[in-house]
Length: 363
Image 1 (cartoon, rainbow, N blue to C red):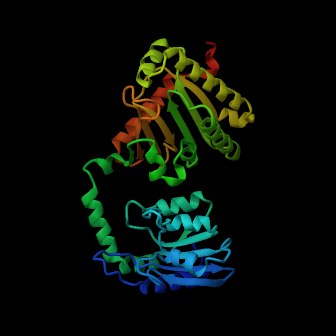
Image 2: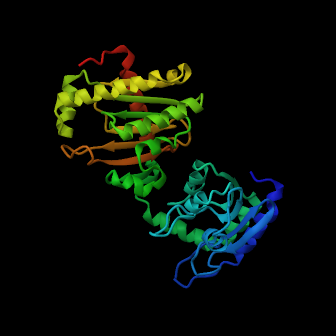
Image 3: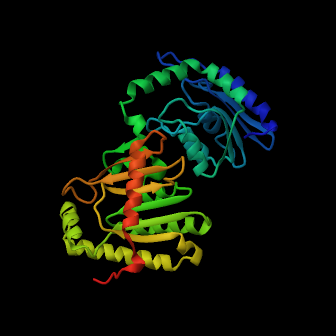
């Protein structure tokens, strides 16, 4: 929460928002103000459309007013959560704030656009930028100022919702792996996605890709296990000793069963070597297991027992090849039976599997 010394800058940001220039395009747009402060001195004040119709306040401040200034150490007071999506080649405001290395962002209200809500704050925090919020009184003023925009976003959201989707907690659908980077630019690969976990990461898969992707993933997990004494990681791969499983999944993936089993064993040995280089405490918090069933699909469970829990499922059509897969992400909602069912299913899969320490990986 912001302290009292911020109040004057917040009020000025609200005043700037009131100056926002209306746009004659038949759509409602937010009224947004931004104030950039460093060492108690205001470097820039502006609003949406201040210099050109439709230009975001943060863009005007960072790229037009302060394009040549070093903004490290600055605090940006913005009345609306910075956007995370823009039409190419425009850059989202959240990314601009990260690129300019501002130290802190104080936000007036969440963006009512459901494709952005909460994501701007999350992107800033993941980049190490401190995020605070305006006090309730000023938030209320901003919500009133933007009431038409809020109503429009709510109407569009209600019209777009497919029955059951919201209740299920489905937050994203990926028609192929190519869409990971499109929908989550800062977490387009498995290692970067796992890197968003705060408390735990569970990976359940047939195998992990060897080469650079494997090492990127391990380096990230190792860093998290070493830095946090609470972080827990689990990797479970399909049991290569089970010939019938290798035959079944090998057919689906268009791979020879013996070749697939050999690849899984090689991955497990590599992970064992990595585990052996951890400190004793970190090693205890990393489990390496094998499972003997074919689940619905490969899964990544991040912080799945917390309110910010997420589960990504990826599955492959028959004989479609290693890269031809589709996936979806589910976030934890109290009413989501699907989330709870999947979480319990993968927990049971891990429980029914065995530790790699208890088996032989010899061919």
